[in-house]
Image: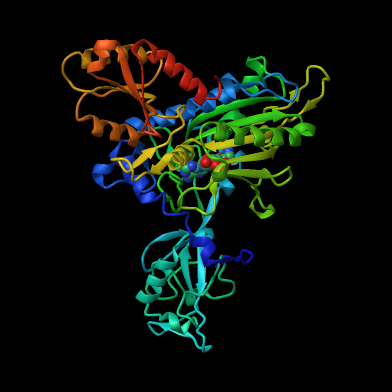
Length: 538
Ligand code: GAP
């Protein structure tokens, strides 16, 4: 079994949750009910690890994508010299020459250790299993189906209640294990030297059904052309980064960029994850937003610190709270093959409801050294050196890589925004930062008769040129407010009888539900001011 250094965690650390405010099941249900995210192939029962974005989900995702592109490519941050840094974009093919994935190390090494359960046919990531040791107080040995059982394996994050339920199902009475009849307070990330034959798998009914861990390559493959054989086997990219390295020379030769500069790309990536889980957190098809920053090796540390700070700023500016974000340096044994010789990798982590009070990775910022360009130079035979036009120095640039998940970013925004509120009819609202909200405003005629819809439609036609706004005419106004709360629309403009009389309407604020009356001809200005205020550009 996994021989990783033994780590002890207290049960309470693992399973305690923040006050029951954000429940993942409820977030997933809202996403489906309101059209953010659906299981892929829903009518066929779905497909594990694949998700579709609905009408509002795609708007939310596009907003995050566009904000990232703006922050990186269109209006990149100011560098240490006070001038904007230089970043250009690419959009490379998902399928590349398979030799590229040999060079990048993905064919040989992009794998996770997995264990199978022969009884249940279920598969687990070996490094996601924890162990609960069965140590009877009287020093005896527990037997299940006549076989000695010394440890219970379970998937990281399993709650105390679920462990208790499993013990009960396996016929193990807690009082044999603890003085006070409560679950003993320790669990382990490694089963040390307990033989597999004495470990009960997470869903098994007896010990000895788990296999030894096997490395499992995460790349999906396909065949290019009419015949399916090893000669035309190709891979779906498992990261967008390599498409950038493959174009390094093309970009340098065809544009005016000079080191230090960055190349950015947003797009799909595919990984045949052993255990896709936690909604869209770990899926098999997802999107990444990656930027490779090419710099002189002597400046790598300075740029790494620069991008750490910039990337945290980005997530905060679009609404993730200080409390929910943390920067965590990778331990030495976590470092990827390309980061080993460098200044290390740090993750920006978010406190997702299913990791709370712990954190889960949202973005990794790695110093990839010159690993990728060197590998591609060696495998392709094409020189990938850069010559500094001022000093004539030739070198292979080092790379700092902020690599964020677009799909995972959407999940963080949804989790952050989800706000239960018993005081309103919907019972919940999405407190999106206005810059990411799928709909910036809703225009609601109080009734579907008289002048209300006419005025509303005119206002809608005006505002939609600049903002993604909703014109919602049907249903009673309470239900329409509830819907807008649930989809996170910051402002609702309501047209009523008074509007025809004095050319004013009400504006209702999502978070406070407070209503003000403003002039009809001030709405555009009001939106402009409030959107600028929200994005800190007023
Ligand atoms: N080029 C480096 C790279 O791909 P990574 O940490 O494997 O690094 C970067 O991926 C980001 O992509 C992660 O921080 C995460 O947000 C996202 N990501 C990775 N695997 C994912 C998956 N299976 N499902 C959803 N997002 C994923």
